[in-house]
Length: 183
Image (cartoon, rainbow, N blue to C red; front, side):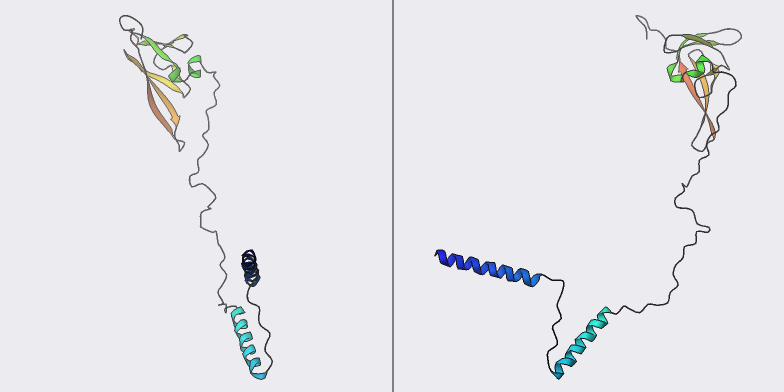
C-alpha cells in the first residue's frame, strides 16, 4: 500500500511538472516546415497569414488637429475675477469705540435731552462711553444713526463678494433690570 501511494504521488508530480512546462511561454512556437514540396506551400500560406496579421491598417490622410486658443477661455483661470478692495487710508487715529466689534459692546442707559438722546455703552471690561447721533462705532465703519428709548441703531458699511459697498443696520438693545435682581 505504501508503494502504491508513492506511485500515485510521483505520477501527480510528473503530471504537474508537465502541465507547468506546457503552459509556460509567451505564445505558440511556429513549427519548422516539414520536408517536402506540398508542405512548403502550406508553410508559405501560414507565413502570409502571419504577415497579414502584423500589417498595420491603412492610414487615411487626415490633417492633424492643432489647438487654437484664440477666442476660447483659459481653463486654468477662475471664472470670477475679484478685484482687491482698496482700503481707506486714515489720517485720524481710531477712537476706542472703533477698536471694538459691536458685539463686544453693551447698551447700559439712554438719556433723553432736548438736543437729542444720548446713550451710554459699556465695553467688555466695564468702561463706559457716551454715544450720540453721528458717533463712529465698531470695526466696520459703523455710525450711530438713531437713539431710541430701548435701543440704538448703528449703520455699518461693508464690502460684499463683488466689492460693492453694502449697508446693514445693527441694533444694540437696552437690557432692563427686572425686580429682584439684575438681568
